[in-house]
Amino acid sequence: MVDISFKRARTKAVHREQLVFLCYHSLTLFNGSFDRSKEGLLVNPVERWMQDIRLMTEPECMCLLQAKTIHCPAVDMAKASKLKKSNILNLRKKVWEVSTYFADFYNKLDAADAQTIQRLAFQLINQIEKIIGNFIGFLYTSVPFNISEKHEHVRIQSRMLMCHMENFKVSSGKGVVPVLKTLSNLGHAFAGLSETIQANLVGSLLEDIRGSASIYHLRVAIESLQAIATDQEISKVIIKEDGVQILCQICSLNNVDSMKVDALKTIGVLCEIQQAQIELEKANGVPVLADLLSSESSIEVKTGVARILAQITSPNVDNVQHLLGFIEYLDDLLRELTNLCIIAPSSDVFMFAAAAISNITFMDSMSCEYLETYNTAEALLSGCLSGKADNLYSKNHVATTLSNIVSSESCRQQVIEAGGIKVLFNFLDEAVVTLKYINQENLQKTHELCENVQQKAAIVLGRLVQNKSSATLITNMNGVNQLADLCYNSLERNNSDSVLLACLVTLRKLHTFVCEEFEEMIIEELVQPRITDSFLFCSKVKESFV
Image (cartoon, rainbow, N blue to C red; front, side, top):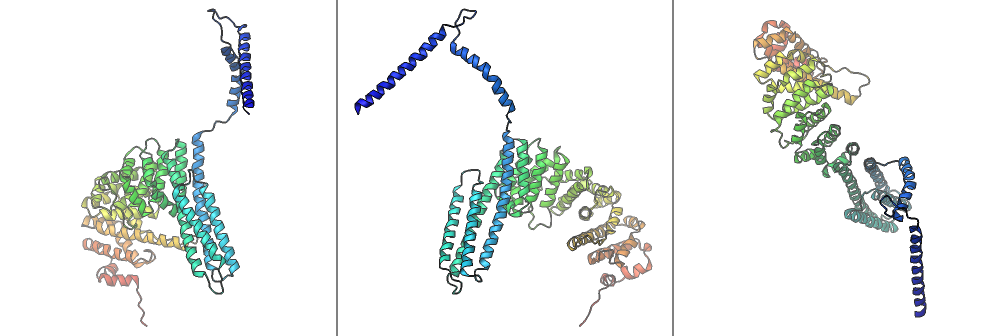
């Protein structure tokens, strides 16, 4: 055995010596053909060989490189962001499908035979494992421990359900209670796992936004986030994963206005949820919004800011958040919103700015002083006269703002000088036109908006009547007859009792200053009687006694 090993080693050594000899001999032969340079130095054969091979290979390599498509990493990352969006939406769809399996199994537990119940249980478990396996494969990192742990919990509950199926009998009701309990545990386990996977996918998409490779990738990632934010359940996950804070950081960047528009739209969608407004406060959202409004950003960016401000300050939202820094930036916000109303290129821009202003007037009494300083009433009324307030929403916001600021003498004068009386009488003419193509829900909304516009317009007119000069201006525009017509004609006031009451009050205030302008019938029916009697007379309330 030793001899054989020795012979093998000896053979290898001989071969090695032969190889070295051949290499040396080749170099020696090649040295005989050395060229001599101008300085008389020899040219190294290896260098000469490298030069020759370079001349042969470079053109070929260049042809291959020019023919080969260059893949941009940013494009690949953008595709990955789109894929994440699709996976998140598909996960929501598949989870809903599994919920139908749970419901079917539960509903047939008492009615179907044991064989059918066992088949349904097998289908349910098989569907759960299939979905979980597919979506765990979509994770862009190694499977986190919390997902693995919850996946194992689902498997344990699935095995327990199958064990119960072996002894399940419908006729005797044996095993029904354990099956129900296990089914409930399996449902909770699956819901927890699917939520964790979804949070992981959403977090990965948010990381794409935070660490985007290019402007193109950033745009695609934000658009993908905006697409999934329309689902309220996914919105809650985005908020939980610090989505609002990340979007606010995007809004703070310079020279990315197109990105800011999409980021602001997404914030607006998220702020439909109360928790998003709290997160906006934590992220110092109000200073960011104020900076965007006062900067040289595009109209689209400022419109997005106005939309968010209108949303987070809406009096219709329960527990409106008094956001951090809101009072501090109130002056800047109202100044820039007023300017936005002036330069608004469309009715939509005007509507969002007017909505934000009207909502802010409910939040702090100081707002009226700022509105007076910046002649906001003139800006709003000018927008109405120029046709920017071409929808009921805009008119409602303008009427709301005017009703809140005319308590000030200087604001009342601004409203009158800016043609406010004419605009208010135009608001009083708003009546619902019943069209066949308007469904019942839209008709109800339109009716409510018309009622609000008319009521607020009548209230503002009443508050403007503080002396004979203002009362004369109103009567000179046929104001008395128009208010009286609204009282007599219920269709003209959209069958609204609140509009009727506001018109009666305004008529009585006018009568105190310009009684000579009233017809006798109007005085007898709408002014002299008690207001309750005039109200009942005009509303034609008919009481029936059984």
